Amino acid sequence: MENVSFENMPAVVTEILKTVERLEVMIANLQKVETDETELLNVHEAAAFLKISVPAIYTKVSRREIPVSKPGRRLYFSKSKLIEWISASKLKTQNEMLKEAQLKMKGYRKHFGS
Image (cartoon, rainbow, N blue to C red; front, side, top):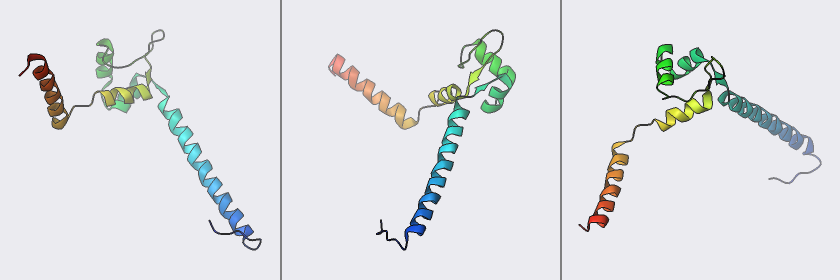
């Protein structure tokens, strides 16, 4: 940082105020994102969020494939839980499957002495 003198003090204070304003905007945006992730969705909102049909949602609920809360007769879906569920359902790449197979083969070789 440059030396601050009495002459350039107003410019430095102005720059500090601009930086504080930018930080306030960033914090407000972060709080909004956190609120969005903890938001509860109904069946129609969850279907729109996942881009699947409402009957598909009901099918997944009945098969217990999707995280859901059911206080009373209504279904509620946590947006953050749905995001976690989508991430956990990720398909493995060929490299990941190959590494898993190699690790299993090492275990079999140690066990059977090949």
